[in-house]
Image (cartoon, rainbow over all chains, first blue to last red):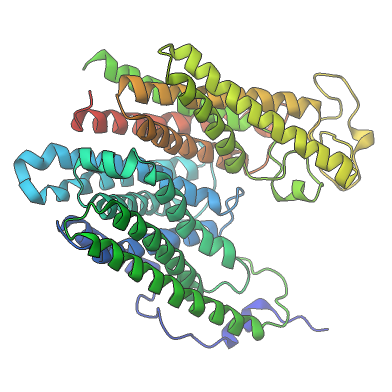
Amino acid sequence: MTVTPAVVEEEEVEPTKGFQIPPDITQLGIISAVIAVITLIIPGLPAVVRGIGLIFALLWGMDSVRKTSKYGLGTGVPSIGVLAMGYGIVGALLGIAFVKFAEPMLGSFSTVASLAGVLLMGIAGWVSGVLSNHEKVIGMKIPGLERGMMELGLAGSLAMLLQFSIVAGSLNFDIVMEKAISNGLIAVMFVLSMMAMFHPYNACLGPDERRPRTMLCCVEISGLLCLVLGIALAAAATSAWGIADGVSMTIFGAIVWLVFFVKFVRMTMQEAYSTVGTGMIKTIE
Amino acid sequence: MEPILLIIVVCVVLGGVLASLGVHLLPVGGAPAAMGTATGVATGTVMLMLGAAMCGLFTASSVAAFSDNILLVSLSGAIGAWLMMGVTMLVANVVYVFGAGVVPVAGRVEVDPITRQLQTPYKTPQCDGHGVPNVCYISGMAGALLGGFGGAFMYFALLNYAHFEATAAGVIAMGIFVANAIIAAYNIGGTIEGFHDPKFKRLPKALITCFVISLFCGVFVVMAATLGGLI
């Protein structure tokens, strides 16, 4: 049996519709960051709008995981997703502390101050990337690891802050501590958002991995996260918009999850149908 | 600068560095160990260390509910992590010996450095060792003890010095702990047998990196606690 090389096989696959607008990683990063930041800093937005920002932030994180771990980390893809959320928790905590600090000065627009925490975590992520990649320290020799870890710190903090603002209804330090952290919801957020970052690439990994398909999986898990957050929000009814906020978030999450799950499975089946033999695993220069 | 702020930073840095040291001592086999062709428990560093640290945090938080002694809380965390790693390695060995039918044997040394037993004759050719032999078991126990102690130490500092609530302190300690454990896992390239492995010599590099990262995290946590009005 002749084994077809993977490269030829990949070219035969037609470009699938949808998710073609941000063609490369940098553009998607900028678009996602802008959308996530805007939905985060405008006070009093309904949860659904913040949910869209959350999906974009997680998509950005997933893209960074994909970019970094395709060179082989040695510890598996999940490790870097967990790292992103580990940074995310510290960054988000710092963000809400900055909001409390800026509240007397900026009033209701003090949410802008939360970006300081995000940026500081980005710097910490960049430093850890430099140390991990430097010849004399750990020496992982992964191109772009510095940028990848910085983006993971930024995306993780943004995602965590957006989830705080969805569940608690604001970024006030004491309210977030009471409504999102001390009742243990943070554990659900931690696990599901790191799943949204590492699971897509971990599941789709292989010679026929394609970015749009991996992204569909990420949006699907983000939808599941929105569903869970919506149920929590409806049960707690903490939002200024009343119980409608939680219910609409639940419906939004369920629709996103269902639509993208069906789309992902369909696309996987379509692309698996044309794969005969993948040959040797493609080496990346 | 108040001394309490410095103490929090020192506790976080110590916890992070101990986490990194603990990871280097665990017998992590990764995917090859899942087929029984490498020494160690068949999972990644992150899962092993996170599992051990979580168990440690559970026991530490239970003890911290009625004790103010930092040593008692940290040691109870170490015991929790210890139990978790001990059971994991024991059950892994039961599966390897009675399920897969392989002899636990270290692949990186000819003679066990502790029991002086010969290792090479029992190793299947083309394999990198099997199961969790004595030296790896002892090394793993030491690693879990150090890691659990570090995690619980960090938790205690965040709970009682920075005055975070129990849940917040636990989650933040876990976040800082996993970041350090993962950086240490990158240093060993995913798999290691224990202190007798040649990769263990790379330890200082991971300690430097984890020191810097924990310093960042410690300063951030202190900033968050100060700005949030907890201290």
